[in-house]
Length: 149
Image 1 (tube, rainbow, N blue to C red):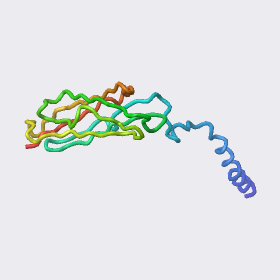
Image 2 (image 1 turned 120 degrees about the vertical axis):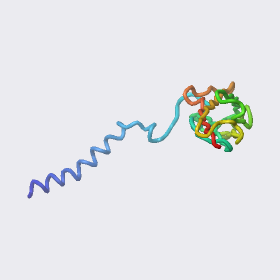
Image 3 (image 1 turned 45 degrees about the horizontal axis):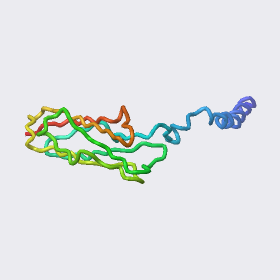
Image 4 (image 1 turned 180 degrees about the vertical axis):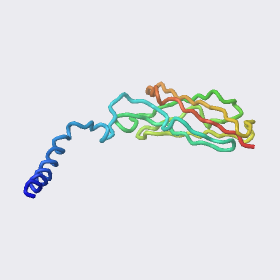
């Protein structure tokens, strides 16, 4: 009985001390969510599914250790893959304004897009910028457009 009380007391007092000494073992960047890479622009999400007759708001983001853009960042957009009759971009470029971190645009998908019910076409939208590099793995958004009759 005495041995069990000693072991319990030892565990209660020593276990917290062990964990307090481990703080430096963990990567604080994951916990603090800091970014220390180069400034880039990217899509906020990389895939979407839509149907004919709908629209989609797409967000472009500025990723930086500073958080917000120090000056306006112009981002060009291009689309390919799906027939032109299946989509309409609201613009060919967006501007992430100084003091912000995002900009958005809309893509409309007309009902008369001539996609058969159950069929699907793929639209790929790519962003680029002469102001800031585009993130290599986040610069393309794929949109799957389903037909409805």
